[in-house]
Amino acid sequence: MKKIMSTNPKTPELIQKLKEESFKNSAPIWKDVAKKLAKPARKKVEVNVSKISRYASEGDVLLIPGKVLGAGSLKVNVTVAAFSFSETAKSAIEAVGGKCLTIEELIAENPKGSKVTIMA
Image (cartoon, rainbow, N blue to C red):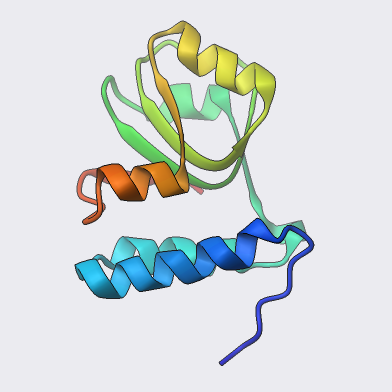
């Protein structure tokens, strides 16, 4: 098995948890997210709020396997789960009535990963 190296101690733990949940709940979405999080730092996903606004619909549940940044504005009420959020992104999402969750919180709320869209 490939050893996961990361400067953030939270990353390998989260990747392991995602793989376990994928197996336990027969939910391949978590295994896919684990693969995306295992990428090197230079290939990690960064999504701006403007991209979320452009591609999301009202009430969507989005999963970003990386960081959400605050550039742009958000016009739709969405639930966003991500590895991390910038302060401006968090305030922009919550300002329109959306929710910001960690990936762990999303797994707890929706173990099967149904109706979750990965935005990478």
